[in-house]
Image (cartoon, rainbow over all chains, first blue to last red; front, side, top):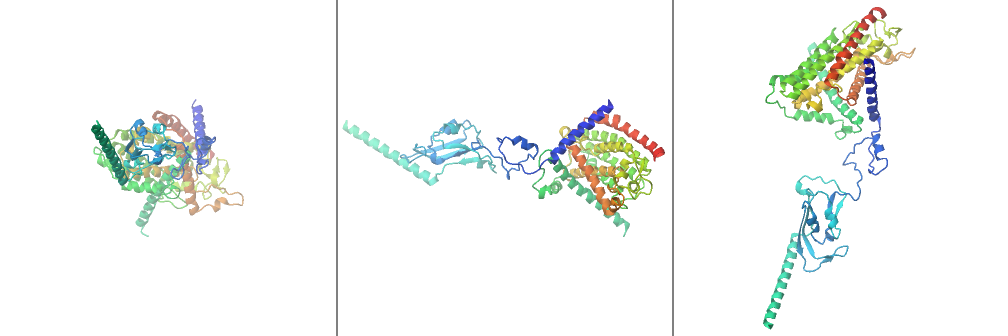
Length: 197
Length: 356
C-alpha cells in the first residue's frame, strides 16, 4: 500500500512536471494576431504565449463591432428619435428650427432643424444599439473603436454638434425674426379680415 | 590585513550576494512561472523586464513602515531581522571552492542546522507579534512544519555524515572529487579516486544516499516554506500567513530571507550530495576533464551552477504541484520520510562498517 502510494506520488508528480516543462519550452515568440474566427485560433494558443501585449498588439475586431457610438452630423435631421428610445437617456439633443429647408442628407431627407446640441454620454451608454436602429437616416452608428480610456469622466461625453455659439445665436435670431414676421403677417391678416367684416 | 576588516568584507560580501540573489531569484521565479503558464512575465522594465525586481525593491524601500496599533512592537520589529539574520548566518560555513570558505568551522554542518532553526523562532515572533489571526495561524503551521521536517532532513544529512565521517563541509567537499585524500568508491565497488567527476559525488557513493537526497530535497522544500509545502503562507487561505502585517522594508527582509533560504538549502544539498565544488566531468583515460575543470574559479562556477539548477527545480515544482493539506503534510513527514531517513542512517552505518 505504502509502496503503491509512493509510486503513484512520483509518477503523478512526474506527469505534472512534464506538463509544465512542455509549456515552459514551447515557443515563446510573439503571439500572432489572428481573429477568433480563424480555424487554428485555439490550436495556436496551445504552444505559444497567450499574452497580447496590448497597446503594441491588438486583436482584430469585426468591422461591425458594437463599441463606441458615432454620429455623422451632416446626415442628421435632428428628429430626436434616438434620444427618445435611449433606455438610459444618454443622448441629449437640443434643436433650432430652420427658417427653411437648408440642405439634404445623403439619403435625400430634407434638413429642417439645426442641432444646437447633440451630446452622447458614453459613460452612461449600455451599448444596446437601439438608437442606431431607429435612426431614419442611419447617421448614428456603432463603430469598432473600443479603446477609449480617458482621464476625466467628462471626456466620455461626446459632443457631435458642429455649430459655433455665434451660429447658434444667429440661427435663433433668424427663427425668431421669421416667427415675428409670421405673427405680424397673421395679425395684419386678422385686422384686414376684421375691417372687411 | 587586519583580520577584523576581512571579516567585515566577507560579511558585507555575503549580504550583497544574498540581496543580489533575491533580486535575481524573484525575477527568475516570475519569468519561469510566466512561461509555465504560457504568459510572458515582466517585459516592460528594462530589457526583457530585467529591472523589474529592482523597481519592486525601490518601491518597497519607499513604502511606509506600518506597525499595527495592537501589535507587540518589540517582537514585530525584531521578527524580520531574526528571520533574515538566521538564514544569512547559515552562509558562513558553506564552501564555495577549494580553500574558499567564509568560516573554516569543523562542525559546519551542525552549526548550519542549528542556526537555520532559529528562523522558526522569527516566524513565530512575526505571527504572534502581528496580533492577527491569519498571521498566528500561518506561524503555527510554519513552526509545526519546519520542526517536523527538520527530523527527516537531519537524518538524511546524518547518513551522509556517517559515510564521510566529518561535519566540516570543506572536508566533505574534498572527499567528493579528484582532490580526495582517501579512496572514493562508486557505489562501494569501483574505485574512482583518480577518475573523479560525477562518479565520485556522495550521492553515488552508496545507493541509499540517492533516497537520502530525495528525502532531503523534499524536506528542504518544506523548510523554506515553498510549494507544495507552502501552507504557512497559503495565499488562498491565510492572506499571506505570518508576513501579512509587514510592510515596506520589513516585508522586504522576510522576502529576502525566503529567497536566501532557497539558495541556502540548495547549496547544502549540493555540498553534501552533489559533489560541492567538484566538477561533474570525469577523467577519461588521458583526457583529464576533471583535472582541467578543478580550481578556485571553476569551483565557484560549479557551486553556482549546481545550486541554481536546484533552485530552478524548486521553482519548477512550485508552479506545478498543488499545496498539501496539513494532515497530509504531517502524514508524509512522520509516517514516510522519517522512517525512511532512519533506515538510510542505519544502512549508512552498515555501509561504513562492512562495505567501504
